[in-house]
Image 1 (cartoon, rainbow, N blue to C red):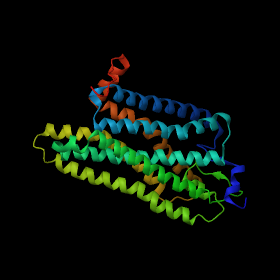
Image 2 (tube, helix red, strand yellow):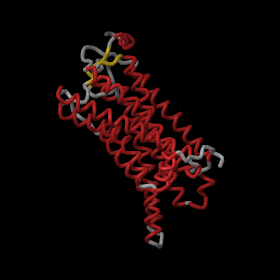
Image 3 (cartoon, helix red, strand yellow):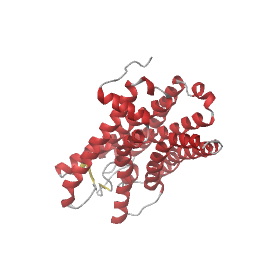
Image 4 (cartoon, rainbow, N blue to C red):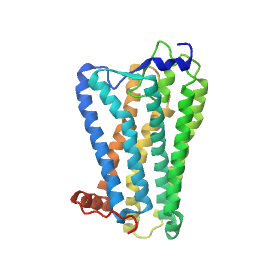
Length: 317
């Protein structure tokens, strides 16, 4: 293919999750189980928050937004991987690949922005409790989430449109189980310098700036909590942040490993990159409902009432 706009007539091949045929059946069952549990668990959180007026607070509003994003994020990657395993086909069309790339970047970036927003929410709640309701009003929370969606779409469109300028020749095996920026640039036979620079500066900013905001927020949070005179008060304050902090460490640890740490093209490196990708695309969304519900009495109560059918549908109550 001489030009990038001609690549729409062919298909890519994905490296997949494993090259060992005997592992395909186990991988299919494992990923199907994780997919069903992820969608069900996050959907239950959204429904529990939406139908229980006692959880209509900024913290749970952002948690419901995060769970919704996790469902969309997982649905962008896992179903195609399951189909490829079941049909023993690793192909994906050029248009399908770039579509998957766009939505993967959109929902992945939204995860990052929401985690930073939730850290800011905890900072305001703990460090400025008297002004919390004024600062984190419903209108402001809605505006923050809307701004996050706009920014994520702009970032995703920038990277996706830059992919259209690339051409792809004979080597079309994408070294991953879904379409992502780095693996796609590796199989391009044209100059990817512009794409790499944009990924470094724009992609790095999308990851590192929210990460630094989270760190700064927790520095202030910890310093404020340590000034609380009673041990019970400190424990209660830490408990409101523990679930969020656990998700942040798990998600950002694997994302930074995947995007900001260079890797070679060796088989071992591919397996490590795939494992890191599985962690932030499948495992983290799977664990989120358990992390947020098992450590939170309000969420456990809301989930129990939802499953028993005792819910409150009005947002105005």
